[in-house]
Structures are given as structure tokens and as C-alpha cells.
Image (cartoon, rainbow, N blue to C red):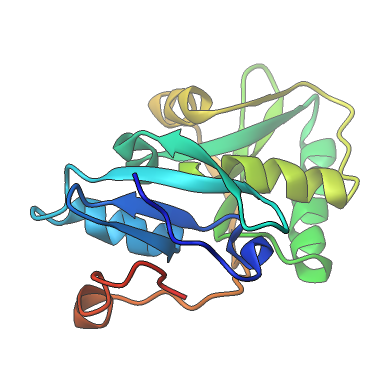
Length: 193
């Protein structure tokens, strides 16, 4: 795979490289990659996330399976009672107001087993690293049991828990995603941004 040399490579960290087979495009957003993988024409493309970028123009890539862009991941915070759960639920919502998350996410307050409740933070799986870093950067701490990952989201949905409250968080992005024809006309470019 031949990649172009980048000026200011640091601005590409967190973006994606799409290997079309006959050429490669660098600088796609997660939303753009998801759209490409959903199309019949590009469904077999290979995707890499720009994990690190160095001043000399070199970048480190992390390969991602296409399924990543079709899944949700999440973190689930278990509280021993409803009052504690409500506090955690409100804390996550307020945190998103003062420190915008890296992507859209939904927050659920739901019943769990035996009087417990669970606060779910659910987001697109391709933002797993960024969401973890966001919570760490915001110094978010929780005293109870926490679990996370793609499998936990599916288990949460399978249990069909009663959702008591729900809220949508909106993320921030340095780049506006292109869709449809606007995206398709730029696919021949080696550097997208």
C-alpha cells in the first residue's frame, strides 16, 4: 500500500485510510468510511485508522474489520440503587455539555437486576478508543461495577431492560463528513483533506 507524504501529519490522527484495491485514499472520516463500506462497489475495501502521526510525515495505522463500522460499543455503569444511577446518568449528560464527546452517543438509565440500575453509554464501535480517552480526560470516575465493549451492548439489548430515561449526546468533529455524490467525486484523490 503506497501512501502519500503528508504535510502536518498530526491533523490526520483519528482519520482513516481506505484501500480500494487499485488505489488508496487517506483522510476519510468514520462516517465516510461507513458509507463506502455500505456500498456494493466498495464493500470489500480495507480500512485503517491513523493511530499515530509523527512530524517527519510517518504515520502508524491500525487495521479495522469492516464489521466495526456496523456495530455499537458502550460502557455500562452499575449502581446499587436508582438514586445513585440517576446521579451517574445526570453526571454523564452534564459532562457532555462542558466537554463535548468525540462522537454521537446515547445515554440510558435502565433497570437492572434486583433493584439495581444501569447507566449505559452507547456509541459507534469505531470510536471505542476516543470515548475511553474522553472519559479519562474528563476525569470521569464511578464507584460501582463498570463493563464495556461490543458484546456488552448486545447483552444489554438482549436483556430487554426497561429504559427509565434516555438522552442523545452530540459529538464534535474537526472535519465535516461528505455524503453521496460529494464523497464519490473525491475518491480518486490520494489525500482527502
